[in-house]
Amino acid sequence: MPREPKITHFDSDQPQFEWDFNDVIHGPSATVLSRKPTDEHAPEYSPIDQTAEYMRRAVKMEEAWETTIQKAREALLKVDPRDLYFRFLQDAKREIESGISQAERYSKLLDIVALRGLGLSSEYLQVRRPRRGGMRWHVDFNADAIREHISTHIIGEHFLNPMEASATVWGDVPPLVGASDVSQHRSAVPIPARFFKRSVPFVLNNAAGTLLKWQAGRSKFEPIFNPKPDENLIRWMLIDPSYQDDLEPEDYERCIASAMDVGQYKFDLEFLMKSDQPPEIIFRDGSLFPQDAYLDNYILESRRGDFTREAIRDLLSCLLYAQEMKFIYCGVSKNVQLKVYSTIVDWFIAKEIDNNWEVGNYTLNDGQAMSILLASPAFVAENLQQVITTCLIRRSFTTRANLNTRTKLSDIETYFRRYQQREYDINPFRSLCEKAHVYMFFIGHSKSPSQQLPRYEFFYADSLGSVQQVAEKVFAALRYCGRTNDKDHSFMSDKEITYLLPSVTQHAHLLSNPDYS
Image (cartoon, rainbow, N blue to C red):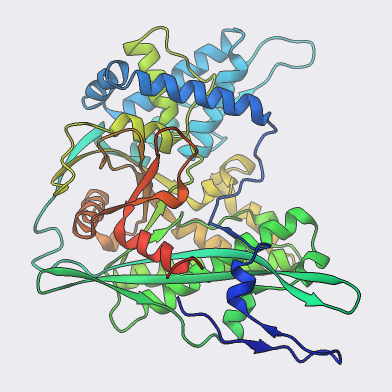
């Protein structure tokens, strides 16, 4: 990526020094951060204990890959996912109310799967802990409402389903595939003086994208940049030192994370969706939802609040435009935190395959567990003709914003009115709650568990066709553009572990990175 020419700074009476951005960004004081999700409610933990437990759990699952995991894989190809999830919730309720020592553990599993994953309202399911001095746990469990919710939020005949590539799903011509990514560069401008040297820190965000075109039967990447940064662009690109002066450390980190979201949403809308040749599908690096999605932060009177509101508004603009023009807007998430699939797999193995299998002591996240479950030596990578996918699970913005645990979803307007009376207009936030629904799933396009799979999550509207049709288009587009190993996000391991990403997404990632050449 070409760099800016040297720029002379003119806001001081002192002798001026030229800025060499290549030196600043690549210098010893610079660090580069990729897009990472945040969670304000992450529990405290011991890094040593968590690392040891994760390693033990991961090793156990990989050692069981050809035995226990294989049996589970074959069985899950025949199990109705809606019945499976309902039976899990019922069993967790029984375990909690039986008064066993694992009540706390199963309580957390219910929160992970039912509330944070499936988005069940606390009106339908709620764990009531023992009163002070008591020992009895109770779970409010509206079975009919839970069944109805599950039936509308899980798509797929079985928990695991074969999917074959269709030559006609996109018509006679391969789709124009787009991608975007954003990276963050933390560096400092050196300021030499007569008696000392110091550096002024800054954060530079960079968004980039690419189009994958087919010409004469061959694919061709076309890089996309913004050649003329304007004032609006610079505001989210360059985070100057004053932000650190104005914000507390945590707010500062959340603020610059939201600035990354703003940059990528603006890029998606202006340079992909509204381009002269808009792609029919966008494989966006990262989740579709913003990193800061809480209503309390939306109304903050600070720079953090400014960027949170802008990210919400920009995402809404992307979704409305994608819906109107019938684009498929698909996130490709590597840093997955949810455990809505992996918890069920653990529970199913313990109940149906191996009575000695642990449940809830430490559950791998969905990305880690599905990479192990879906990997198959029989997979033919050359043509991506057939794969095994998970069932599709609908996740709404209300779930990402934790509104299903903070208020009654059946009376959410009363909750919104309390916020609408304040200074900031929350209508964009309310609109996202109404319109922003994604379907997430994993595609088993790997031969080995050492190849990590991303989670695909696409925005859904009725104008796009059925949910299953959109999922098939996502797979067909992936087949057109192929997969690429992303070694930039490898874990430290004796065996190299890489992510398998759509090649167009990886190309956008490289373009947004300052080390790209």
